[in-house]
Amino acid sequence: LAFPELSLTGYAIDDLLMQDALLAEVEAQIDRVASATKKADLVAVMGAPVRQGDRLYNCAVVMTNGQIWGVIPKTYLPNYREYYEKRWFSPAGPQEVDSSIIIGDTRHAFGTDLIFQAENRPGFSFGVEICEDFWAPLPPSTRAALAGARIILNLSASNVVIGKADERAMLCASQSSRAVCAYVFAAAGWGESTTDLAWDGQASIHEMGACLASGERFAMDSHLTIADVDVERIGLERLRTGTFADCARRELAADEFQPVAFFAAEPGAPTDLIRPLDRFPFVPDDPARLDQDCYEAFNIQVQGLMRRMKATNGERIVIGVSGGLDSTQALLVACRAFDRLDLPRKNILAFTLPGFATSEGTKSNAWALMTALGVTGEEIDIRPAAEQMLKDIGHPYSKGQPVHDITFENVQAGLRTDYLFRLANHHGAFVLGTGDLSELALGWATYGVGDHMSHYNVNGGVAKTLIQHLIRWVADKQVVGAEAAPTLHAILGTEISPELVPADESGAIQSTQATVGPYALNDFFLFYITRFGLKPSKVAYLAHQAWGDRTHGAWPANLPEAEMVEYDLATIKSWLRKFLIRFFQTSQFKRSALPNGPKVVTGGSLSPRGDWRAPSDATARVWLDELDANVPD
Image (cartoon, rainbow, N blue to C red; front, side):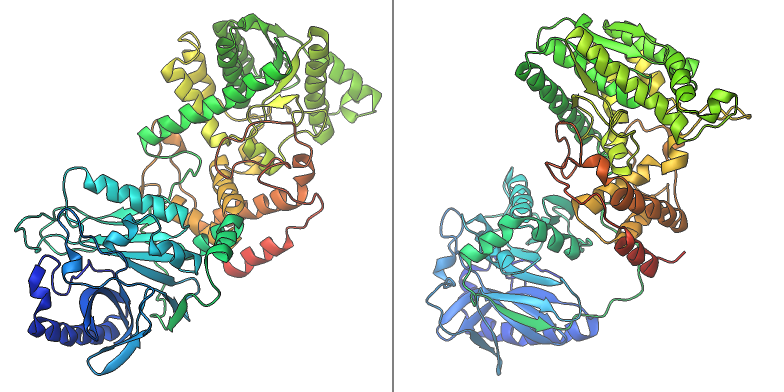
């Protein structure tokens, strides 16, 4: 529980700070507050003026378990504009040789080098700085974070003027991102003297750049701003960010900070999170942020393809267009790239390649899209070649048996890619890939001669859940013209299917998500496992928090009502098991041989040359055991 700067006395009391009676009462009231922390079962950090010999310091007092655990003096005292703190206080600095301070009749740890760590709550470690400290070029919190503090508290009495709240928010976000920590800011508000200044009580909690919570400004009632901080996630981020440890070794002496160990309150029964948690980690639910993300993602793809075209002196590409999401997005990227390169769209050679299970709906969408975009469209029926190959290898289907196994599927997928590569040779072009990030994570691609391979793949860094919104964004913004918009919306409403196996007797078509799981969950798993390296049990917990109740939390803009679903924990665990097996054990060999393609989202590259490097013969046992041991069926 973090209070504002000098909250025990009030900040704007000026020369009253030099009154002996007031300072004596401060010591009595610090002891009173410290005693209250035992019953409250919390750690309280309160601002107070504290004497040390013949000096007065602007301090943060850390209290828990009924006692004082440490006192941190303010390092940088403002003495400009409306602040004159050097009139009353001494700054903390190298001249401080005494590492303890007496309050009442008890000696306590004192200094800016204190890190508070809970022995019984792993990762619960924090440091403190005071107001002006984080306006300094090198805030004390930077060194505290390097020394191991995962949470930084700022006790502030920053007055308010127009625009200052935005500046404080920017500094909090920036420091939490740069120092890889949570940053808690509590400023003075109602109750301070308004002789010459005003106060807004700004309060916020940031974690690695993201705002988890912010309080009401200019409120007249006492209130709390509360958030869940994921200290484990902070630790994992520091672990994978090598520059953090390198900086700590460079900047800190081995004994520069002294840890103060305490016992925190034991955790009670698990409760629901109150922190914001996106159901779609790759798709923000804020409309303005989603618009910005779509703009950046699409242009990253376009720029990547443009550079590859220039590097190869290319003027033509070959692309397979199925009428599905992925090939549609790749074709849209190609059209925009050709427009910007002043190349005619007729040089985009688009082929639809119907097979045994191609529906009339997807084929007509493919043709409508190619026509609307003004590319060169052609159709090659792969069934005769597929029948010949099945006959040549002695497959039961060639003898009239309805065997629709993996060989039956991959003969079609392989022939499509084979045609595209030979067409590229024939026309002096290169093959543009269409497979997306989610499919690469699940190994949902035909290796080598199938959709796994291309000359360049613009979709390899884009998750399936984001591709849907990108197509909708391109349609609504008319980025490649207005003519294609109706067809794009029709494609968005089509069932995701490889269309390699004919519909069953009931007419139901082959469903990708029925086999590999809902892409919404798979993308959630992918983000937290590859971006942060979280344990499967924690991923399952977070997924249940995000997806357990469809009525709780926000949804991305324009998401169809039918996709606003919920999943119980048993369903989440079941699909997570399948994801772990596919991701860690059965599909890495495909990712080890990927064509080039641009990285689009943070942590969202499975290229063997980029964010994810792993052996092709690993086992998923460690992850499966952890999931089974900690998540009930």
